[in-house]
Image (cartoon, rainbow, N blue to C red):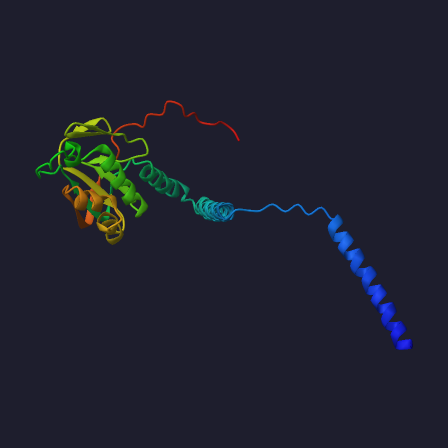
Length: 239
């Protein structure tokens, strides 16, 4: 009898506990939002980009600390003028105001001389400004440190316009061939021109446009010969 009574008490207790748990769960406001997979991927991409921005900022801060330390040391040693002269030279280089040399590749583009297929658009046989821009972008992505078109330095303000059989770069017009020079890792730059996924490969293989590349141990790129046109930028005084 005692065992039966104990079992009965345990059973009743278990029932009430279960009832209270179920009641509590049912009374809880369970508002769950379903998240799409592409939303999760977007969040992951945003997180990765933010992490990269933080890393870039940390690297920039470290560079500034090193530079400040160099200035302080130069000031103590009495060589600050020399350090500043080197810094001016570096800034001129970054501003495209000094000639550069280094290894890289030379890319040559020309219109095609093949016969048009029946009903084919004649523009398929012509090099356009968009073609030049796409190849420049491929070279930039491959790590090109300096670029020039027919001797004209390519800067952030460079405009490339197609006018018939000619291309105008920095307000100077050139006929064919169009020659792009890029300083950087020669093998990487050359791969950016000849890889099956490159824009140059598509021009060459699908449109039969003559696009060639040549690796060089030394490429000379002239300085940007004009003052940059700054119509809206003003120097911010103070903090």
